[in-house]
Image (tube, rainbow, N blue to C red; front, side):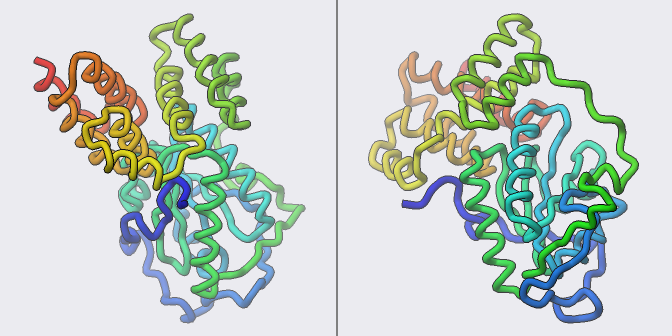
Length: 321
């Protein structure tokens, strides 16, 4: 059976970066495809991408697959995903480079990659972007997606291997004028973050719930709890299992909630909202409350400022009142 999430070939097509760079076609100019395993000297495997410097990474993708993480510094799930991506990048020993983009500071890149929420992860191969996934995923699933990106790169002759110049330093901060490191996370947030990193979602849920009990206005904990609860519900389940169960029982609210989780984890936000809001009027009071609570979780995951949340909130209100 296929594992969550859907592979990249099932996602939307490549975005258009022509507004950012007039890139050569593969095999033209100095940025042609790399020979099999060609060593390429780089100062690091990790970089900070900006609207101003991103052309460099598009050029680099002619030789080595580039993974782009569009993240927001204020989101706990982004921190967890960053740790996973860092580890995967290190383990691949130069077969990919990782470029982190701050969505709040780089609106052109957010628009170019059609990033609807953070975190979102894309790849670039031979100058052409490929959307990979949205949201924080378990490490095993992240590794599966990156493996598929490497296969795509090999098919396009992009097989260079980065060799890091130790004298230049390993961190992207050494290459850019980045601000000072952020202050440490609050203890319970750090506890949740560490639990997510090791795949212990129940422990992360407990830590976030404790943080919320201590401060009901802790929006980072509320959003983190919603995100890790989604990961926990999907852990160990397969795409085929979830979709087949839902198809066999279209009126089963639990089965439809599971498919909505699947849709949201794959970045199909409108599909997730529509499924639950269509189901809502058919349910009894208990079922309606379960769906309402799940939709409110989704609002926190997607971000309350997202226009899709505003539309879903209005539709939910019309059903409630």
